Image 1 (cartoon, helix red, strand yellow):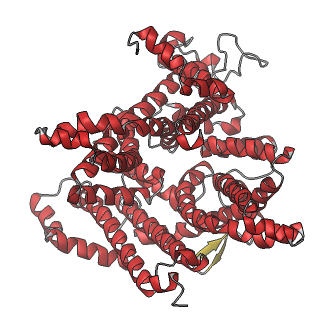
Image 2: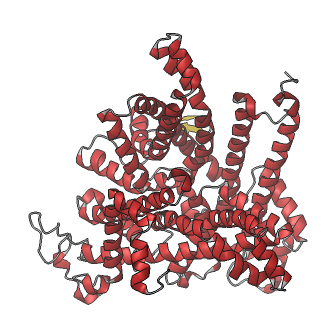
Image 3: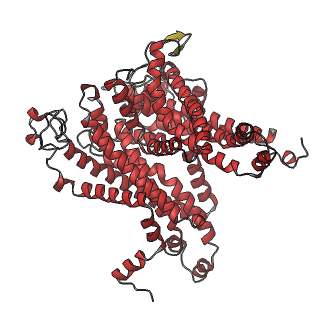
Length: 309
Length: 330
């Protein structure tokens, strides 16, 4: 019966409960459209953005601090106005969105891979390895995520030589957010692994002499990944927010390679000179992005929770 | 109860020792402490001499022991950046953060509980639905964006409230307080509101959910059947049971408030410990980072332990002592 061609799979997805519950929830549909739009803008930022904010030769200081084009004194060439150095706000915003999403996705992937692996090891191997992993997880969980991320960030900046800090900023951010957020994945996966390893198929694999690593990765892992997807969606919002916060605090992306958080920090310095558009537009973009991801995450959690059906 | 107390205290001490160990590793191995003391062109012999004078060539376990002993007496060495004792730096920043967190915590309770009760009792009212939507936005907006919006509206456009600093402070002994001057109180309003907003929405939603659940319970129906007045039912019977989880969440979130004070202090240039910590992260001022870590962990551990103990007192079902739980020990 099952049709494995692409259109067949698409059709069976369209008939599924999940898609039905998706269509029924208007907020989720709107949130998905908003997120898809933002991702599209971020991916094609170099093509879409009307100016290149990093091309210093293209900047004309006479055009600095222009208000958005619909306000008095605005220039139609700069839809959302310009900042104090005549950079187009819309263009910096698109490039910033790109970096924010990149860091968000990368750190969620890092956290998920690390968490799933440690959870599998803890649940399957047990003993001392399990005890060590879970104690570290407990300690990490008892501190707010932002504090742990700040601390890892600070330590890594201490290790790096000063002249490489800016170029390595994106890696430092991904590591500090990823290393903070693996705990939830590890706990969930460990719980389901403890159940799965009692099952007959695992015993069968052991009997015919399959090695432990292979049992974990090819036999157990596919069966414990479901909840990980939900966690990853919910976590994406958190990761984007943490990145923005670190950049806002001045320990994230440098001003030469700004993310949304950096743009807000820089714009915040000019708040009192009345050029509100430099700070409001990145803030609004960030808020919409986080809200959209959170709404989708909440819906996915409820839709996949059999208790709420 | 006694066994529980001892076990809980033992756990707390273990966590603190672990945190102190991380702080010690940072302190000892993040950059060479000797390099931060001697001049750039010091000879190898001079470096060795400093190393021996500071006992940095001792076995690691002895160095760790000395670090813990010093930390317990509040001695975290000198800040690399300010060349002043770290303990003095922290002590002069502590009052600002403590007052900010205290006011934010109180605000979240004083506003959150009544709003939660109201939305639970009138779930279909326009005000309730508006509050629900506002709370969703409040949770989704990044806290620093809320802070910037508050500054933009109340400081830049309306000009009612100051946007940075603590205003005028009065020194009482070593503690400097902003509670006693008008400018101090005005300066507190925006930061404490920004800091409490997340917790406020959390408490409001929690009280609402718990209250709606409790109102469906049998004993509430009986109270109604007995003909008690609504006010008595809602506030004497329902509210009491609603507040148990609020205590836990509130306690756990107090730690979150201290962490998020870092962001608030940056937005409002509030001269507290969080701002000091951010500077330390920016300049890799390891002694300050290590001291902040140990100090904040100590506060967290104290809060978590007291919440656990308090919970034990409030909710008799949770008493760990088996004789009590079965009702014989009382």
